[in-house]
Length: 179
Image (cartoon, rainbow, N blue to C red; front, side):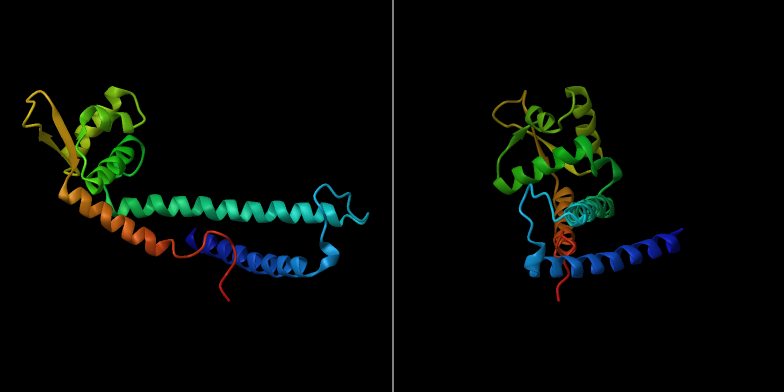
């Protein structure tokens, strides 16, 4: 199966190189400079150009989607699966930025960032606490209130995830290759 996928990816790369060459030639040749809404020159050139533009959009869209899939896989290398997406992920992002901004956040605010119903958010927050990714901190001025923060381990994992993500994203999203 992986061998088949590798062959398909190689074919896509070959087609990308051909498309890149064709687009470079198109942009350099004034004969292909068609204005928007142009009827074309009667030989199907404008229709083919529209098809080519759709193909390019498809390739860029495919690469962007692959980019996102790779991000999910990268998160899974640094975090437990329960924290890699959905409410858990949203709350971890909020708690990470709150720690960097040095702001205290309540359980209510954290649950609101989960973008899920309150009971679902609370369940995910409790799971993040059990996993050691965040921690409850009592409010010394009001015993009824509990603050929530990302734990040192959670911060460490998120820091390493983002470091690795930045390395992985040094490659451009579009299909152009450095020459």
